[in-house]
Every structure is written in structure tokens, then in C-alpha cells.
Image 1 (spheres, protein in one colour):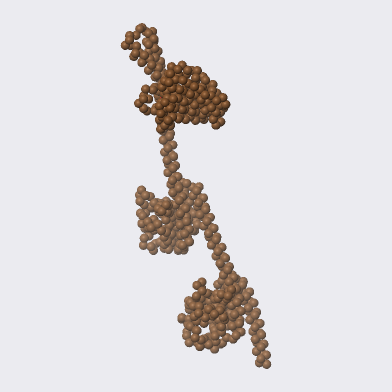
Image 2 (cartoon, rainbow, N blue to C red):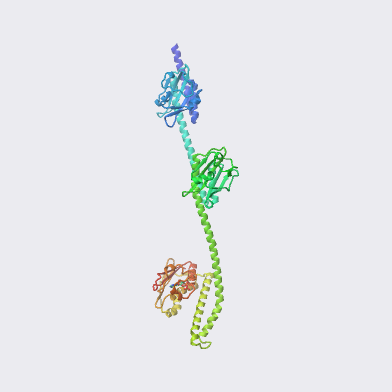
Length: 597
Ligand code: ADP
């Protein structure tokens, strides 16, 4: 009878436990919150096995100690404050053996150690089972009863079943938490990347320094979700830090300058190291200039460019806001690195802009001067023309004997007057020509360079032979017609040939060539004259430029001919070059190119 009822009780108990296990399983897998899972496991064990204490331990990452995460006991605080070393005490022993145990007389067990702060010498019974996951002990559950109430094997079996379920639920919750954390970190990283990207975009599109600085501060403040953002720039001229931007949700102090070393900003500037304060006003170095601001936590990072601190980026929160984390300071350092580069770029851009403006002013002034110069030359030339014509006319009449016979002494001076008056007239004509060329509209038409040099050769034949020179031509018949104003072009060739005659001593040879070249044609005038020093070849096309040299002093001219040639050729969309070795007898070669018609 007794047996039967004992058996019946056992069966009944087993059924109750199984039902409880199913319920526990359902309950603890219903949540993925690790702490909640642990609490529910402990409460189910407490309800079913009715101990006085029920403690749930988890292994710490070192694998050498465990900590009670849940403790249902009158000494919960003490238990949770204690560290259980693997291998020490009964719970520690089971954590190292991995085998569940029932100890019904703890006072007699040599392994037993007392948790500090709990009463000693109390008879106690205990069941303890490890939490195992993939063969590893990840924690333990220990239930104890004070006094004479013992545990039975069935209690231990039940606890083992419960810890098996618990281990699975714990692992699941941990996996879930790890995933969630990874997700949150990824999101944070993505936010940071997108902010940095946005900043890079702002920076590349913003070259005006003040707008750029504001963009940097705004982004920093937004990204960190802080109340105040600020940026300071070092001013080498005043050896001070100037507040460039400060942005906040309420009015803040601006326009402050700090000495290097003054306040947090000044100290970060000097050290070149980021610094964080959890409460600004309890820091002895707090700057009185900001007395009106209830600032709490502050983070300050240097702006470094090429190893030099050029400024300081700051963020702060009003009192009561949370302190800055390492992650936030890292983000600020990243932003500061980008900002420092951008600031230097903007400064370079500003400097370039300023230089461009100065150049443009200088250019305008130069144009004005040119204009007045031209006007002056024109006026003077006009005024000179009539008196010169009269002087020359009378000089020629005198020279020709129209006004009576000249004595031998008179003849030479009169001849000089006549020649010099002619030279002066030629000069005036040159000056007027260049100004007219400038003012005149081009009338380009298909023009044959071959015909042009033929006409020139005919006209120059007399001068050339009088000067004791020979003139050759070499015309390639496949040279295309060029697009040019024939009258202007004639002036160009006349000038080149006049120079060739002028600078080539008797016995020399002049050559004119025409040949096709790159969608157009070239005309070349070369001589075997005195040549031009190579270092002056660039300058001979400037107005009034003449190669300086004692031998050249005997040549007439105003240095305007080649300037006219150059201006006309350029106005036609062509180019002109001068080549010479600067050796007398080797001569010079002038070549111009014009586009085909
Ligand atoms: P200029 O009226 O003085 O000849 P140009 O403008 O025609 O002025 O020429 C400028 C200077 O270039 C000349 O003074 C001369 O020194 C040099 N030059 C020009 N053509 C030749 C040449 N064919 N051979 C040597 N020097 C030349």
C-alpha cells in the first residue's frame, strides 16, 4: 500500500515536473531579453523546488570567475556582490567539473566556503547544476535549503533538466543580443560614414572659408547631438586663437580671443591632444569669458595640418547632459582631420582669389595706360605730319636747287635735313599704322601668299639691288589660300622684308618661302644678316622694342614694325616666330602661319 502510494506520488510528481518543464520552456523561450530569461528560469526553479535560496550564476569572459546574475534569497545583495572562482567552493567546483551534485550536509563538505556577509554555521542542503552549452560551462544554478529540509534525487534531476533548457535559452538570448549590438554598431558606423561623406561634399562644394567653418561646426553638432559646437582658428599675426564659429540652441558668447594655453581651447591648442571634461565649471582652468553659459561636458580636439595645430574643434552639452565617450571624441577627431584640410584649401583659394583680383586691377590699369599712350601717339603723330611735310618739301626744294644754287658748305647740311625729315615722316607713318591696325576692322578674304610675295618682290627689287643684296623666292604651289585681309598682310610682309634689308650688310642673301602647313600656309622671310641674340627673340615683338647694341645704333626705326606684324598675325588667328643664332652672317628667319581660307 505504502509502496503503491509512494509510487503514485512519484508518478504524480514526475508528471507535475514534466508539465512544469514544458511551461518553463515555453515561458523562457518567449523572450530574447537575457536578463528576463535568467529571472524567469530562477523563478520557475524557486516555485517548483521551493528552496530558501536560488542563485543563477554566469561565467565571466575570463572563464575563471562567475557572478550571480539573479539571486532569490534574503542575502541577494551579498550573493550578487560576491565573485565565485572556478574550482573554489561547491558552486566553483561544479563549474569546473561540469557535473551536477546534491550536497545534503554542507557543513560536512570540505569544499564549502562561506559567502561574505551571510550567517555561518547554519545546516544547509544544496543542489547545484552547471549550465552547459556546446560542452562548455557557461554558468551554474545553485538552490539551497536552510535547516532540516533535504533535497532528493528527483529534485536534482529536475534542476538538471531545467538548466539544460536554460542554457539553450541563454545562448539564444546572447546570440540575439550580439546580433542586435552588431546591428547597432553597423548603423552607427553607417551614420558616421554618411556624416563624413556629407561633410566631404560640403567641403568640396564650399570654398568660402566662413561658410565652410559653419558647415563643419553644424555637422559636428548634429552628428553628436550636442547643444553647442564651436571652432577656433589660430591667428599667427596676433598669436591668439580667434572664435570663428559657435552655434547653439540659445545665444552663446562669440567674438572671444584666447591666448595659447588659456582655457581648455588654449590648452588643447598648445598640447595638440584632444581633451574631455565631464563638468566644465568644476574644472579650475574654466574660462570666465563663458560665465553666462551653463556648460557641463566638453570635448575639444585639435585641428592639425601638416603636423601644425591650426585651430580647435569643440562640442559641449548643457549641465546634466551625459559625458563625452571615447567614440564621440574619435568621431570629432575624424571630422577635425577633414576640416583642417578643407580650411587650408579654402585659405589657399582665398589667397588665389585675392591675387587674381589684384592682377585684374593691374591689368585694367595697364589697359588704361595703353589707351592713353595710343591716344597720345596718335595726337602727336597727327600734329607732326603737316610740319614735317612742309619741312621735307622745302628741304627738297633747297636740295634740288629750286631756291637757288647751294654753296658747297650748304649742300651737306641740306642733304642731312632732307634725309632726316624723310626718316621722321616714315616713323610717324609707322606709328599711325600701328594705331590704325588696332582700330581697323579686319576684312579677311581668301588670299594667295604666292601672289603676295610676287607683288612684294616686284616693289622691293630696286631697294634690294641698291643695297647690294639678292632676293630669292621658293613658292610651293600646293600651299592653300589663306584667310586674311590683303592690305594688312601686305604691311606685314613689307615690314619683314624692310627689316631683312636693313639688318643685312651688302653681299647678303634674302629668301622668301611659301609652303603648306597644318590646315594653312606659312610665309618665311630669312636673311644672312647680323642676326638677333636668342635671349631677345621673345621681346622683339613688343612695341618700341629694339635690340640694344652699339653696332645697331646706326639703324633707324622706332621698334614698332614687328609689334604691328605680331598684332596683325594674331588678329588673323595665326602665329609668328623669330629664329636666330645671334651670329652675324647667320642671319634671322621670321615665319608666320595663317589658317587656310
Ligand atoms: P625697328 O623699326 O627698330 O626695326 P622692329 O619692331 O621692326 O623695329 O624690330 C625690332 C628690333 O628687332 C629691331 O630694332 C632689330 O633690333 C630687331 N630685328 C628685326 N628684324 C631683324 C632682322 N631681320 N635681323 C636682325 N635684327 C632684326
